[in-house]
Length: 65
Ligand SMILES: [Zn+2]
Image (cartoon, rainbow, N blue to C red; front, top):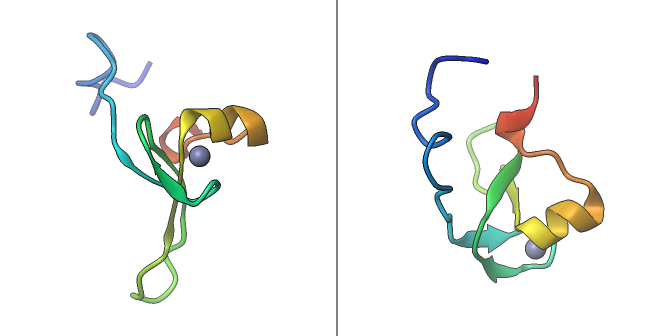
């Protein structure tokens, strides 16, 4: 288990409210799925809520190896 940057994993889960790219609306429990680091323009981050992550089998960006 990685020891760095794991402050939020121990107690409770932080509920992040944000925009879900998949159903095009705001929702709770938003996680970043993809980060496109091309250029410097906006729109490079794709985030998804929990229902969409389950529906589309998405893996959060931070949970990838
Ligand atoms: Zn969604």
